[in-house]
Image (cartoon, rainbow, N blue to C red; front, top):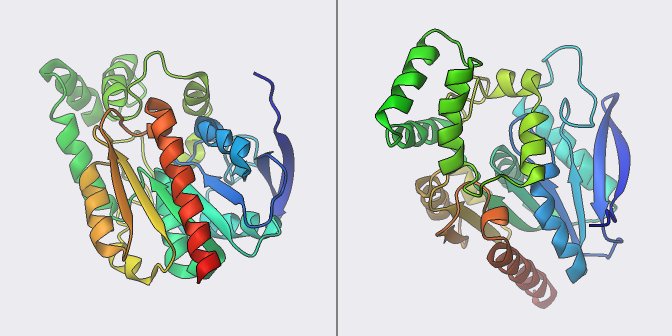
Length: 298
C-alpha cells in the first residue's frame, strides 16, 4: 500500500511533536485523532486514515514523549493537563475554527475532558474505548482478569506480588488478557504491534502503570463523569463487547452526556476500528456527516 501521508513537526513548549496527515485541507472537514496509552503511538489508529477517501483531512500525532515526538529528560510534563495543552496546540495548528475530534482509550479520556472545556472548538466528538472514571475502569478490568483461566490468574498474582511485571511468564499471561480484551484479531495487525513495541515506558509507567489492568500511575484517581454535562457538541461513544474499558463505562458516560450516541460493537474488544473496520468507519463517517449537517442548519 502506497503511503500518501505527509509528516511534519510542531513545536510545543520547546519540544517537537510529530504530526502525520492524510488528505488535503478541506475547510470544515478535518478529523484529528488522539492515540491512547498513555505512551502509545498513532500507528494503531491508521484505519481512520481511510476516511481521507471520503473527503476528510485526517490528522494524527504522537504525544509528548511518544513515537517520533521528543522525549523530555524528566517526567514533569507527563500529565493530563499538559497532554490537553498539546492537543489544543495541534488543533490550533490545523487552521480550522472547529474540527472533528476522535480519541481512543486514554486518547478518549483526553478528548472527553477537552470537550468539557472547549466544545465550541469542535464539530463532533468520538470517544472509542474512552473513559472518564479510572477507578471504575480498574474495577471492571479486574473483573475481566477474574474471567481468565485459573493458571493464568495464578501467574499474574505470583509475579505481580513480586513486582516482576517484565518476567516472560507474567508477560505471556498478560498477553492472554490483551488477546481477549485489547485486540481479538490474531495475528495482530502490524500497526497494532508497532504501537505496542514502541510504547514509551517513561510515559506509560509514570501515568498508567506496568500494564493495562494495573493502573497505579498519575491517572489512577481521575474521575470527571459529572463534567460531561458541559459538552454541547454531537458525541459518539463506542465500545466493544469485549472491551478492556467495558461497555459499563460507556453506559455511565452516555447517561451523563446529553444527546450522546452510544454503540457497542458485538465482535470487538478495544480496537473496533480494526476488528470491525468497515462497520466502524461507516458509523463514524455517517456520524460526522450528521454533525456537519446539524451545524449548517443551525
